[in-house]
Image (cartoon, rainbow, N blue to C red):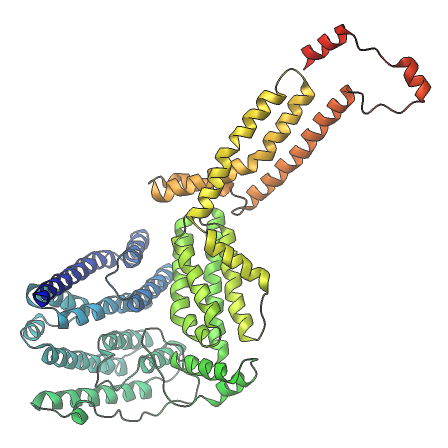
Length: 554
């Protein structure tokens, strides 16, 4: 009975996930279809919608989602540069990253859901509909081999077009198509390639170096991969050794390989001599150096400096986010923050975990909290920039010290709703002492009024801070984005607010000083001291008329 309930539940769950993936693809493709150089404004809005879909929907695995977000952010940059080839290549990679999720779901789905997934898979990756229909009627393993063989054939055609290209832009686009198709089948048991191989070839094309020998080598490996796959299809009972032939050794260039631009790139073999020499100068434990070298090689870094260059790139994106936040452009600030986080997770985090796992996880958590936090402030991004520097300091055997760690822990504890509620509550409670000040120091006496006004300016920064967080909450959760401009009243947000706080402190000192001096003079506390006898002779007498005058005065 229990088994009979589990099976329908699993079937319903798989159907729901498949339906969510197809709906997600339809909306994403509708947005990507509007990205054209002829209409930059429409293209920017479409890319923003695509990024929002990827961030909000959970249809893609995190690795594929982060890689797609990275390519979309790069597409925005190439759109601004009006580079049609680079823009098309990035959109192609995004579609095939989503196609990878469709491909895996298609092989596991059944019935109508498999048909819907197959239709989207053909649209996303350029498969013939007849081939998809044939794979839909086949068992999962046979369908995988059938589709994989078609992808390999298309990869061979793309590589052939790259070899025959008349110029480098054509070669780059053809090679990018082959790379995108490889992303679909990269985890195949018969795979003879690595993502790093394609990235190397793309780097050669874009840098102006000879690329055809490398593309020819890729073509040979793709053809050998497809041939081994076809031989498995003709054999009804393949042995494990036949199903997974050992990959043929490939000659690697001696130059430092470029960094990978996708997910799942792993390198094998010993560390290059140059990398080993760099690691020997680092003040790390031998075990940490070994893990660091393996992580750098796994991501395709030929040097520690290459990894530090990516850290500078992430730092630059955070600096832009900070600038946008200070200027009140919070949508652009969050877009830069999302881009920096995706680059951090793909390019920096695996390496940082090798030598400073605690700081690396703390930095990733701070990234997540900043992305989700309400009431983002420029000061928060400054703390995150300090965390990136802490990772670099740990690499060199140094640290920013306990004060930085305390600031990070305070950010993780209070960032977002807790901090907003704290300042809003302080602003609301400040009205009660202001009311007491009004009834206590109000009246016709100018000096008491000056003192009361000084107390008002003392509480004014608290009121402004609470109002700024109230505006942030209403802008993000209340559907009133115009109120987001109130965030500029925060001292942690803008230089003008900082100077406003300084001016209010100056006014508190000036008004309170003037009021207290006048009150002290009225009570005779500022008179110059005279001889005791003279004071006794001239001391005024306290009469009922004097008391009445004081009562009327105060």
